[in-house]
Length: 211
Image 1 (cartoon, rainbow, N blue to C red):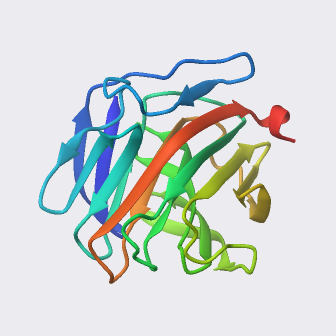
Image 2 (spheres, rainbow, N blue to C red; image 1 turned 90 degrees about the vertical axis):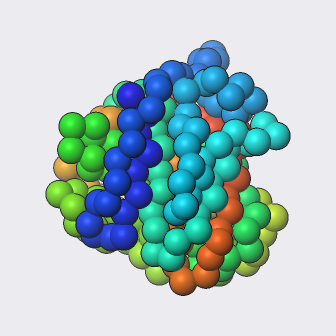
């Protein structure tokens, strides 16, 4: 089922289970989602800390608390994949990290995630057993500052985890702790709130198709 989880890292604070669903597939797509259908299965929920909802053909994260991590999964399962999405930091918060998740393990809430800030920072991590393992992290000149939108992509296959922004590989790491699982989207605030991030045009293809 879909999961919306928030934490002040590394302690998980709240887990809410919601209805499940999926997206249509295309000739080369394993999964495709344009967020035009509010019943397509992504989380719709809100409280004082954050809100997740469909809006104007996009999927919107609003986060009100500092150092707060919010995510959602569509209840899918994939092996080696390339996943991409268009992201807009419409809240203008330069320290909000936003991006993609893969190989999410529903039994224990472990996963890989990779994201960026509008200030040019990036991270690739494994979240396992309530702890973050930083696989790669830094600041990249390849990241446009305060861009209107970013095309984010993530490889999760053959023991490689890679982050791409606007079709440029930013960094990668080797890790084979998990080899399959769900995908997801996330937003993680720093000290600057409220934050708002909008996602659109999500696509999952086989890892071999992305090479």
